[in-house]
Image 1 (tube, rainbow, N blue to C red):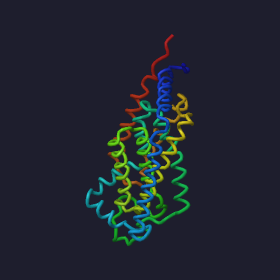
Image 2 (cartoon, rainbow, N blue to C red; image 1 turned 90 degrees about the vertical axis):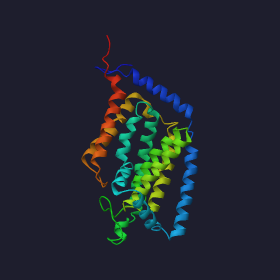
Image 3 (cartoon, helix red, strand yellow; image 1 turned 180 degrees about the horizontal axis):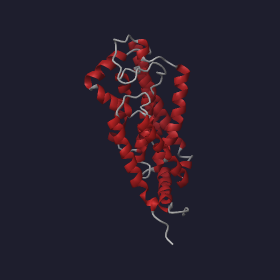
Image 4 (spheres, helix red, strand yellow; image 1 turned 135 degrees about the vertical axis):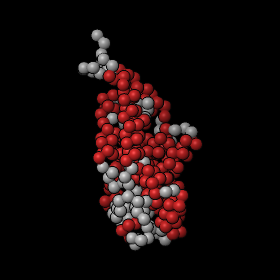
Length: 281
């Protein structure tokens, strides 16, 4: 199939057909394992609450150990990988090679955004800087005080890792994905802007939504139509612009942001250079 002008969708159409086949073969594998992991995280949250005295419990042990292990700048970089805009840009590494994963990430991000904002508005828990004395903690980055529950960064990190987990067959790689997401959760406590229970709630929510998205995209495949797919690629581009213009409550990490944007742009150009081939006679 050709489109007007100088662009051809033939190659992209073939890519989408291959993605459809892989999605049919995948049959939602991994969603059940993600659900089992969410139960384990709930159990951990209950145990932490009972052992440490409720919602605020466990903050200082995690905060102190984390800040002993890594310097402030390391935690500032790690926490940016829970920024949904960063994850949108990273999705460009998969957008042409594995469009079915990209589509699952888009569905998960849509559900996760609505879920997170709904809970944050509904609960509106106060963050550590709004509860603890100013000299008790050192906040890295903006001193946020509201909408603590759940941790949106942790939710985003586990959502992203959870989708990749479901499509990955290697357990060492799966464990590495979960460990990376867990580091983002710990970073939220290390920065002084979330309670451990917020991070656990974010991890539970992210994996639950990832499992739901993996199951849902087995039936809803609108994002694997060539023109719809190209329209969705605009979302990472919007995320790039936002990253370049606004830290949005995150610690400032300009070097990391520039590097991520460059990686995203290079991946985009390499992935879709075939669309620029001129139509032949």
